[in-house]
Amino acid sequence: MIPSPGSLPRRLTVRLRLTLLYGGLFFAAGFLLLTVAYVLVTNILESLPFTVQSAEPGLTQQQADAIRRAFIDEVQHRLIVQSAFALLGVGLIALALGWFVADRALAPLQKVTATARKLSESTLHQRIAMQGPEDEIKELADTFDAMLDRLSQAFDTQRRFVSNASHELRTPLAINRTLLEVAVTDPEASEDMKTVGKTLLANNARHERLIEGLLLLARSERELTTRTEVDLGEVASTVLKTGGRADRPDIDIKPELTEAPTVGDPVLLEHLVSNLVDNAIRHNVDDGMVVVRTGVLDGWATCQVENTGPVVPAYEVQSLFEPFRRLNTDRVESSKGAGLGLSIVRSVVGAHGGTVIATPREDGGLIVTVRLPLA
Image (cartoon, rainbow, N blue to C red; front, side, top):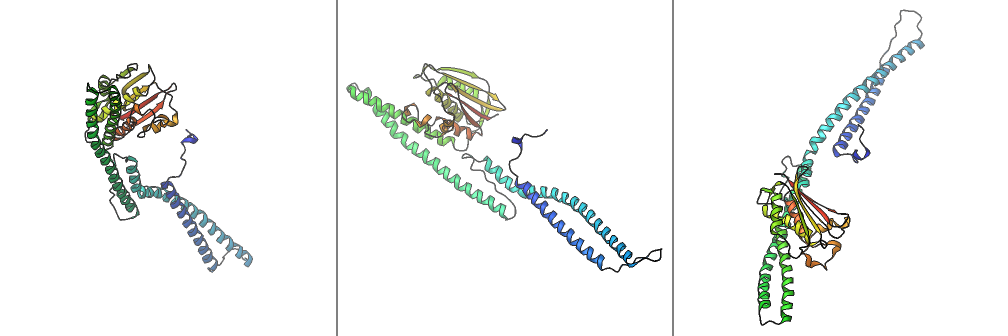
């Protein structure tokens, strides 16, 4: 079967280029050697004493020279033909050996590439730790490991800062909430004060949600410390039973749940599903619909949340997974949330070695599909 043009390799691999280089150098050296041998053999034949003996008398010198010339030409012809066949055969063997030698020489680089491909913010603890002679490739691997050490320290410092700052901010917010609740429920408080207090309470609640989201985001970006078998179907069922939204009773939630076993942190996975459902309810139209599906798809434990809502341009989808980003970069409707829901989802999915894909619906809304490794 002839491969289509799209399936053909668009570039030569290093292994193939090294093999071609080895083969080209071998054939060039062989051709040079063949040329030198041809010249040397020709000079030797020209300088050797040559006597023509014939049974027939009367052989002239011109005829003897012609016989001598024919003999030398025949030797040169056979030398060229047989040497060319020998060079071709040995050259093919050299190409095969070059292919295997290049693969062995590039094996350390393949290890570096495989390690780099597996890395993410939550797996920066992995190292190449190459063993072998102190050559250029080992120097490259050691430099890569040193860079990973610096990156890991930088990410750890960032996570600790976010976590510590969030913890420090929770206490004054909790105190503010208590004082505002006392002030609002005071029977002697004026209506204006109660109105201002309720506004401040709503603002304080939004800040508390933001802090909780930052804490959860910092936690989800760390390496998992808890790994147990979890059923995404059971997690989704629990979230739907306990996470109803009283402020959007018009939203119709349709569960389509089947078993989807995976391995991970149950608390983080519950937050993952909860954020997906909450985001689908929060960013929806009046009398809208949310469908929550779980199951096994293509060998992955899958959770999919589909909702109606505003039309989402395809070029805006990826930006929705960034922290504090909303559709059309709208910050006026920040009361709908802190803008961390999908960021937390992506971080939790990455920590569990899965993938998350968001696809806009033609009639408006999103279909967010999370795939995690099967248990």
